[in-house]
Every structure is written in C-alpha cells, then in structure tokens.
Length: 268
Image (cartoon, rainbow, N blue to C red; front, side, top):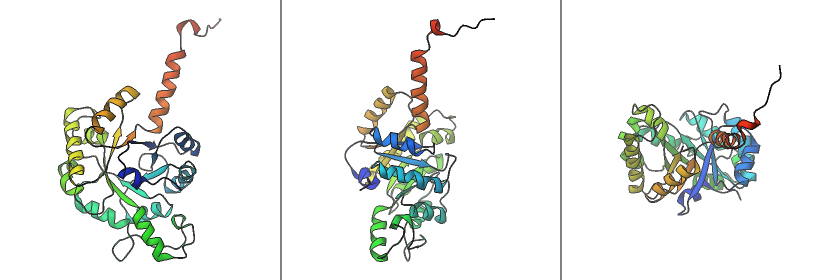
C-alpha cells in the first residue's frame, strides 16, 4: 500500500521530501529509490498541470512514496480534479485568512457538508466506485488540505489560520515570505526567521503538523536547519527541489573534475 502523507505528518519521526518541478517519472523513481518519503508535484511553478501530475502519481505509488500537489489556485473544481487523480493532499499557496482556509477544506469534502464534485469513475476510487458511501468515508479520512502561508498578510493572520477546523497541515513559504516582507529573496533575514518561528508556534498551539521547506544548497546547512527546527518540534521537511538537488550534484561533479591542466588545447 502506498505511503500515506497524513500518517507521515502525524509521525514523530523526521520525514524528508522535495518539490517535483521536472515532469519526469524517472526522477520520481530516483527519489523513491534514494530514501525520500514524499514529493510535491508543483503545478504552480512547474510547467505542467494536473494531467501530468496524475502520471507522476503513478510513479510515486510504484515507489511507495507519499505525494501531494501544489495547485496554482484554490478553485474547488481544480481541487476536485487533483483529488480525483488519487493524489490525496492539496497544497494551496498564498493563503492569507481563516475564511480562505475554510473554503479550501470544504473543497476537499463531498456534499452536503462540502463543495467537492462527485463522480463514480475516477482514479481515486479505482475508476469505478461500487460502494459510494464507503468510498466517501475512506476518501475524507485520507485526503487533506494544506495551507501554504507565504505573505506578510498570512503571517499576520497566522493564529486564526492555524486554528481553522479541518486543516491537515500548515506549510511555511520562506522564500515568498521574504519577498512579501521586502527582503528580496533573503530567506535567512531575521524578519523572515521571526515570522516563520511565529508560524511554527501557532501550528504547535493548535496541534497542527507543519511542513518546513529548506532551500539551503548544501547538506551541511540543511542539517543545521533540520537540527534547529526539529528542536522546535518540526518533523516534516521539504528539501530544496528536484532542480536544486540536481543542479548542486552537477555543480559538484563539475567543480571536482574541472582541473586547469585538463583544459582542452586548441590548435590554430
């Protein structure tokens, strides 16, 4: 059975994932084969949509990796389409108010209490749902809405956001937050660190799991940040992105092997 992100979020163990922005199932295979617990299909910044994410989800399933999808919009129709693919958790960016969270949560739930459209023929139910009541009960137990808070307004409203009923987890967006606070991508700035710390405290006060992105480009800085946040109760980390991890690997090989005495000589 495929690993469940909700179980990972509730675990006391440290779990590691990344962002998938390159739409290649082989990369999902490599993540799974090399110990990553989950990945997030990024249809906000990645150049692909839900249709491609569904194919990537099959690779995650095959590798016993949990998966979530970051959507570009909180539109209930888009959320429905993502959940129907069998990707259980949706991450909605730029969340700034508790009312927005309530609408997002409702979009993950079927009527009469929610907004999710119903179809008996979708991948989340094996393409043909014979026992609708049981499917709904199982689906609403497994699916979840994750609020990505990454603006100054969201940081100001974090107490109300974290207290909203039905939210599966809170995700911090340090890079966008730095831009919103006027620090131009400096996610290490003390103002950003202070806002992130307040988000973590708000989540902890409401018993809400938190997902912490870490953009540090080296394993050493990543480890230092993991130690910092695990000491504050964070257990779920999103390391870089597939592009960052691959770029750093390529750069490492290039730096290690590019010696001056091996430079090519050109004859005239």
